[in-house]
Amino acid sequence: MHLHKYSPNLYLQLIYYPVEIISLFDEVLKSEYEKLYIEPETDVQSKSAMTLIKDEMKAGFVNLHKKDKYCIKDLTPKQLVRMV
Image (cartoon, rainbow, N blue to C red; front, side):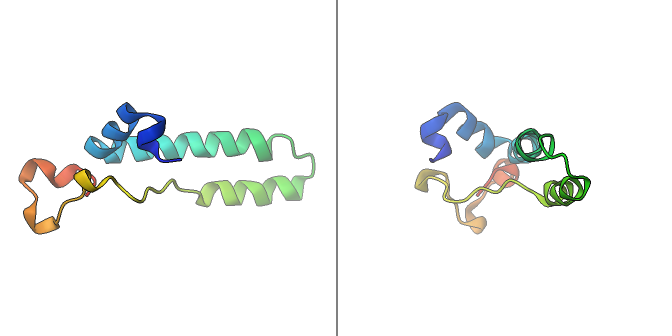
């Protein structure tokens, strides 16, 4: 599902504050992964393997709306911190 359809407000926050929002997404992703896959494991080897996977996980975003895409040469100084 596209983030804009799920939560337009969260999508705008991602566009305007990408560093902060992506960091939050990373933390939530790792936390949910831990709850679903690591905590239920009883085998020590499986737990350590799952923990290694969790440490390598990162959130990623693709396919911004066309209205939010800009050519780098057309950016103003205020837009440099935005996702483009």
